[in-house]
Image (cartoon, rainbow, N blue to C red; front, top):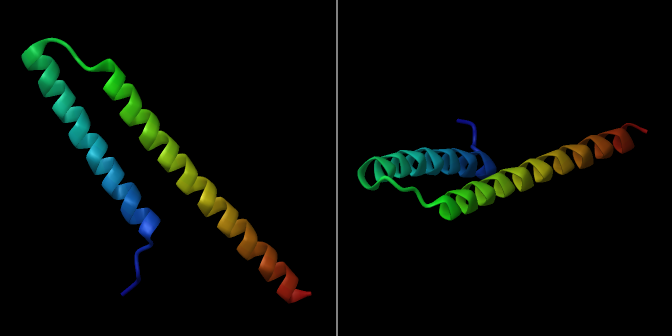
Length: 74
């Protein structure tokens, strides 16, 4: 059985959270007629930043691994 990386688990949890958040905001808007714009902006900004940082970490790790492979071949 292949071990799942923490970053992939975190991304799945983040997407599930965002899905539930959007559904909750839609229900809130339907019932009250107003949405919390600042909260929505902050939640999506945080999740976007978190996803960007995870992507940056992944690319820097793969760059370092490929550089080490090239060094080992020489």
